[in-house]
Amino acid sequence: MELLRDPDADLVAACRLPDSDGFERAFEALFLKYRERTYAIAFRITGTAVDALDVVQDSFALVFRKLAAFRGGSLFSTWLFRIVVNCSIDQRRRAGQRSEAPLLSTDGGIGEPVDRGPDPRERAATRELGDQVQQAISFLSPKLRVILALRYLEDMSYEELAATLSLSLGTVKSRLARAHLALEHVVRTRFPQLDIGDSSPDSLGGVG
Image (cartoon, rainbow, N blue to C red; front, side, top):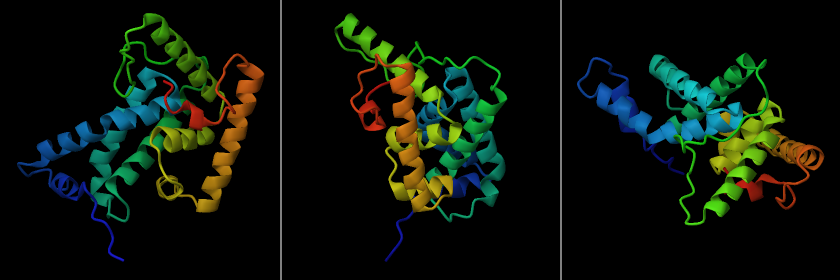
């Protein structure tokens, strides 16, 4: 079966030639294409807008330095998201002494959708629920936060999760099941006021 061509192949090829005229344009194109998705993943893992922005900066700096080592064994996006995940976990560890009470960005920052509906009360209620959900997720371990973020924020399949996280399909499924149970426990014990059905992230997709 013929493998699908990486849609970013041409931009990646141009970025391998830093002395060429097209390098800056190609690298900027990759950054603009993926900055919101990388920010969204980083935000869900780190829990704060400031840390997420730092992760985006660190991730693309690593891409710049390591692109020559990228051999195309996976899609560029898979490789990039793996870097973002690792940088996010590192950032979270560095910030381990900080308060664990992250809130959603209030300025509609990059990667964070802004509800522009006509009812201010509805917007406020949605924002409050989003804050509480993000706080609930912040109690999970980094590994469980990662798999929830990629599965339900990026809508990754089991196969894509396995490629991005360098895990077997069996490990992906078991870790996702653990994440569901852990989030359900956190919601039940710490946030009983949340009405999100069975507390599985399927019901969280539109929150935040």
